[in-house]
Length: 253
Length: 193
Image (tube, rainbow over all chains, first blue to last red; front, side, top):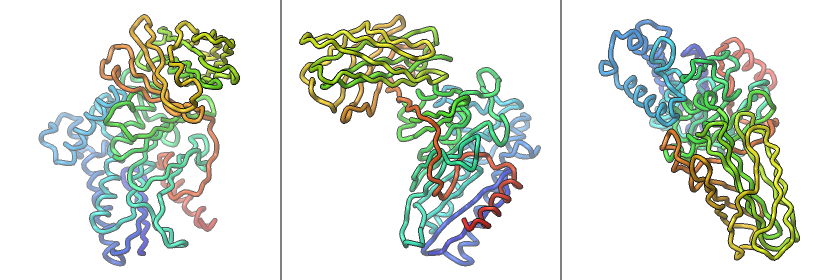
């Protein structure tokens, strides 16, 4: 079993790709990884709000309309609309100061894309960790026992990131966590414009990365009111783990 | 926004069901009540309730002491310790069928409770005396009809506790700090991890 792990800086953060393949190795595996890195750089070029010539920046400035944008940008726009609707507006990329900012969804979306690129190239066991937004495919290969296992993914205590407070076993799917820590309070409540105070950190596990990412933000905003979102059929099978702000407690669905 | 999702359920020697739910979409001042009833044999007498309530997620414990009578409805005294707005008052008697008097597993549908903004009715699933699921089969119409015909998920409250760190990945901090991340990687490598 071939194994490759690569970490690279992009989107102002680190993406960590860990993968195993029976059929693809050596230079071929390196080439696939390079194409993943290249894709991530394209995402940065298209979506960065820090780059004035990105499509998203031009959208924000009104220099282009969404119809002018390439497929990926329009896809993210459409997914943002869906996430806004599924979260009753708690996740709202249009309510961000300065205009449309899909950052709360793009990492989860892109992590899925990266993972699917690897799978399509014949790499069966994949973990893409985009700064806490993970896409998992096919479990991982434990060479010590020679078998494929679930990915065990820990949710980190927002007050002590060396401590794991929840473990999800995921073979295929996504997990995303939002929090006010590490990057500071970077999520605001679109209804009030205030800093989101629904939770200290919010984790969502489910099939699709963009939706996990967006809903984690929605839980940060809405707190346990967000429970109702997860009664929708579109979110069937999605799990939530939220750490409360002022107590050493958490809740989950 | 305050709202309480209060689920109380119980098993008493046979069964009991005490149900209360405040749908999340409603405002804080709106209080929601659950009725409780305990039917059946009176050997076991504890009814426990767990509640996840509103913003501060205060847990409520309800203890009900059924009076041993053969009548279909038994008085229950309920004391809710929810810090917020919820107080469980046994105003409505459940009409759970006596046919399941000795069962400890199954699904139980509480009475439809009319509150000032609509009707609430909760169904719980009990397995070996523990509530494993609770959904609202009826919830009031609110400002957003989309939520009203849905099963409302139940929140499971817990204390934060360290878990096994035997993991292949972590979801949590946004690793914007490249320095911190690479430092961590170095430390992990030194530790042979």
